[in-house]
Length: 70
Image 1 (cartoon, rainbow, N blue to C red):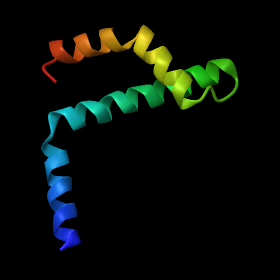
Image 2 (image 1 turned 45 degrees about the horizontal axis):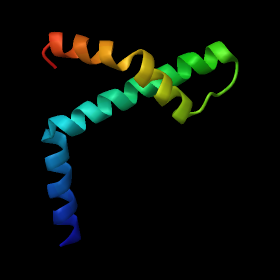
Image 3 (image 1 turned 90 degrees about the vertical axis):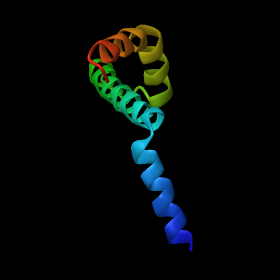
C-alpha cells in the first residue's frame, strides 16, 4: 500500500509546475554556489548562496523564464 502512495505522490510531483519551478531554482542556486565558491576559494555554503542569488539574480532569472514560456 505504501508503494502505491509513493508512486502516486511521485507522479503528482512530476506534473506539478510549482515543484518543477522549485527544482529549476534549486539548480540555479547550486550553480551560483559553485561559481561563488570558486571565486571565493572556499565553499560559501548553501544559505549564503541562496540569499545572494535571491537578492541579486532571482527576479531577472524568473523574467527570462517567463519570456521563454517556461
